[in-house]
Image 1: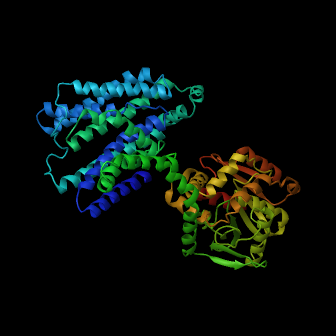
Image 2 (image 1 turned 30 degrees about the horizontal axis):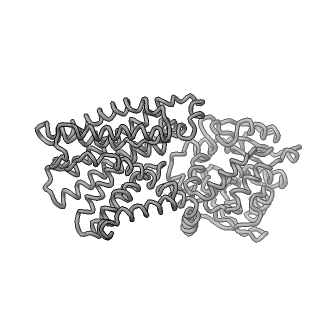
Image 3 (image 1 turned 120 degrees about the horizontal axis):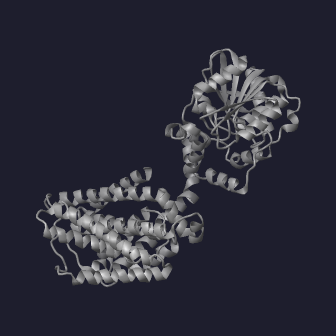
Length: 585
């Protein structure tokens, strides 16, 4: 949805800018034509970029849609009945031809498929020439025939075509994100692997071929009722090459590539080159531009922009978010421990001290909804290297983190306290209770880091590096940790921005610390009353790992069904009941 909204804003902005710069609506007409060809370009993205089938016959489907619409407008009284029926008939004919041509042709691959589809395209062009219908076709009624020609028609047409383009962009995204899209990409990447997974290659290739043909037929119908003139060569071999170039230049994988490529191939000559290029030099300039784009961005402009965004622009973007978020006021207090370290915390209530320790990429915000536990002075602290506490050189050292928490307890004079640790914070809590047992009177471990370490492979560390340099990846990781509240975008946004405050070295070092954690020897003779709480749907820590932790500590184990890795935010009331109930047990 966000991509669609962003694209809509970009289209509107480009229309307004073109209107202001040219002082007229000619540019809006050119942009409307760009979006018409972009719809066909998205069909090519589906068949070429996502299914890996090289087709050079899809311009013929544009011709089928265009001429069907024109013929029915001519044959039926009234403009709109003919437009509607002609478009529907054009779609039906395009689907029939896609099935008839696609079924045998899609048994071919690569250049052989391209040659077969070229033959189809040339055949359709010659068939159109032979139809007893005036060629070229002039004076096709405009889709907005009720609006007088002029500024209002051009502006309204622009917004109408933009709306239709966005509808088909959304449809295309739904298709590519559905199981159909997954199968298409499996076929593109490896037909052997796709077949081994049970994919019906012929059926799925045919589905992609038909879907792309529908996109092209719709584009052809829109071309007819916006341009008003048709001629067979408009949808001939050169049009097929233009569609291929739209995909190559714009980007074959992303639907946005259809729009970007269409702007380069269709819009740029109409808006710029025809005005400034010397007579007869347009083809040369066009060829040079194509070479530049292909050499500089071999994956296409859309894909290239995404790569630049993730590889170059994400770190400064995340740094800017981090800087702004850190400036925002936040309620809480800061204490300076005996080691000279500043540690930030929030507290609520009165009574026996209850101290919360958050997990990796976390902060006190993870306990925001569970601070009101009756009978307790509830305290949520930002561990060093997290949140608004100081950065120290011991990133990833669980024992060092425990020592800092020990100093924090002394500074607030809250020992011995009731200690609750979540995830990585549970590992810190275990180390603290074992090394400073007099400061912890009772212990609750929520989805704890396993006492014998976590098994992490090289792929996991690669994922961590990606998350460190991608705000979207970080938000996705945070949402996964939020379990049943993953769709709470407001909370995910707040927790993700808190995660940005963590020491960047911690992304890798914390993972390594959790992998090497082994407190089993220290756990011998452990006497602090302990409860291990495990979310039944936890995707990070397994129930077996929580069970081993409980057995090593001689602790109770409680499995909470229906929640994932974050009981404090998934079910705050039940979390408070568990914490309060264990203290009186």
